[in-house]
Image (cartoon, rainbow, N blue to C red; front, top):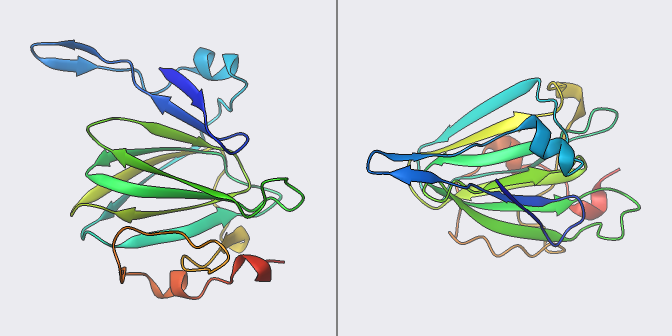
Length: 178
């Protein structure tokens, strides 16, 4: 794996080192030793898979609040997504800043996301599957979010008029977070 620090502190881009032959390839997607050598989380008690059927659907921007913020390892397993991460850590010098990445099944690129970041993605193709490894169990009472269309963030989502869940339509703006 190739670990590259992203622009926002604690966020890492992880690219696969593929070993290819005529059959295809093999690539490591996780190694406890390599993650530990970079000072990253090595405990993943929960894994999630999302299937989104239609291009343009948007999920997010979600995070889990203290005392159980989630560290995530995110990978697009099928299709392609526009993945966005927003720093929602109060007191952080990068609070309110965001960074976006295109993740595709073909590239295998992963994102390591520290706790305190809101996460969302928009599908760029039909039938997208996104696989997450999570550092925490899910606590529904700690589920939080930020509006996908918050003018303070001004995220340029690639597909106009996204399909959203009612819950994602109701999140507060960044300035309204407690």
